[in-house]
Image 1 (cartoon, rainbow, N blue to C red):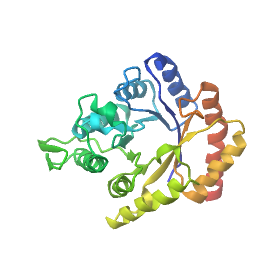
Image 2: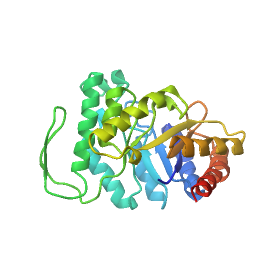
Image 3: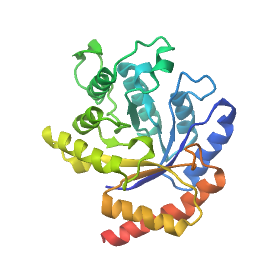
Image 4: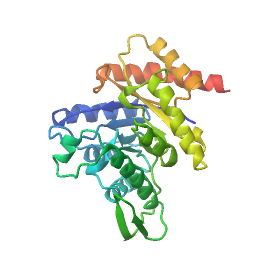
Length: 284
């Protein structure tokens, strides 16, 4: 499985042009991914899907995704239409990041009915299932879930993009194993953390229980780092890939925000090529 490298952002409206420049720089430097957080209840933030669509229109190779989509404010049938449209326009350069929703006071403030944690996880699994049914052609879909329902809804001819979740709890981790294609460990947990060691087996067991190969479900890490020693970081990430099965890294600033242009250039031109080379060399 190819290892993917990108960067993440939490940019606001005031940072829009600098964020677009970072995406352009990431594209020219050969990174695979860019992501933008999705907090539509924060008025000063860029809307994730409007911004991602614009950025994809300016680029030719890099893939974008919301890290992660705020499902309670984005009904799955509409989300399916959004991502298949972006996929069709960009040549498949979209990943669907999915989250059950966490800041429920803010979410409910947008007029969205509040869900319990358990119900939110049920809704997440239903949503992923429904989105996959609505993609890739086929007959109209009727879906009668507890949280989502559609009746004789036409499907898109565009295949579903990869779906990665930001699951944290045991129930959502199991849902990831059953229906998703990738997992972004919560709270920027890394491959040596207790969170990873305790969580990944839940995903694997749930995947196996429905006949899926657990190895096909990626683990992509949000990586809040300052790059002071590129060679040491490259060695660390190579170990994460070869020894712990990591298959993607999204660089953030050390405080979890958007990396600056100098750091992004060092990531793309020093760290990433070294990891790619080491992984290929070891795999031959």
